[in-house]
Amino acid sequence: MEEPVVESVRYHAPCKDCGARLECWGVHGLIGGSLRWDVESVCSGCGQTTADCGQELPTWLRERLLADHGSGTLQVTDPSVERVTAMRVLRAALGVGLTEAKTVVGRVLAGAYMGTLPEMEYLARKLCGAGVDAVAARP
Image (cartoon, rainbow, N blue to C red; front, side):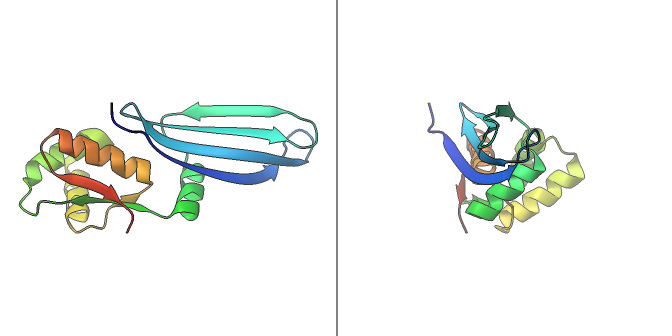
């Protein structure tokens, strides 16, 4: 089994119930071949705790993670990669059409496709599984 890739962020927000300070922890990870996220919070005033999770990373959490950790990039290490294979893999993994997949492949090959490190590692593993040498890295 491959190692998990996880990023986390700690932040504060006002409690929706009492207005006191919520201490929040958000986590995004590639675990067991799937991307997952969760957020837990505890209120310093009323003691209320919440937990939320899912697979589709919410935009607000993604933005916090990117602000805290910076972007990861997806790099193809073999310049002679078969573009059609890479397009097929990325199209399936991202759920995009042919036109967008072509754009994504161009950005990947240029070293300009970025996201959270777990997102980039997920795509790198998908590409490697199809015989395309790829790695996720920090720029």
